[in-house]
Image (cartoon, rainbow, N blue to C red; front, side, top):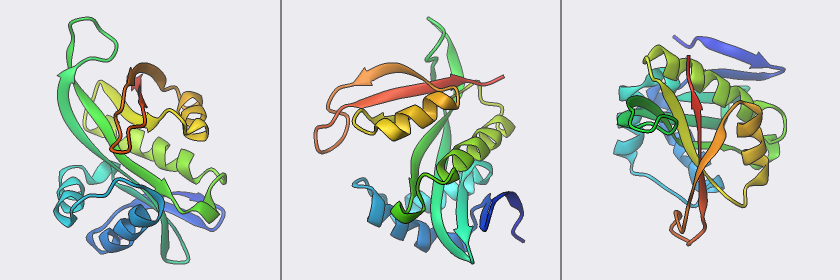
Length: 165
């Protein structure tokens, strides 16, 4: 049963289900240069459905965010080892951008990550993606590091993170 987490006009924000995976993969192929195996999507949905969120209009998926949890060194504390949420991928079809959908996806994934008792939440974003960097900063994420030649095409990324309470 689909539970709508939030509505933005005619757009429903909800947790992903197995039937969403093929449309999500199609959005990924249309919008991002990084692609993943079918199994990878399935494993993230199984691991943390609380933070695998889709946006849909009239039953059609138009955006998604998928995350995972991991343990590692803190992005904020000098010697801290913490449980972290990690945004693996987020995308909204181009014709639906700048309508608050990306923001809603991130906010709902933060809620899902908090349910998993994570101390921090982080992501990587292309340094050239100014709109995304501004959105993440607006949501409280801070640039913690520049990752040189992070992407396959050689572009640098910012590692952005937020501490969760």
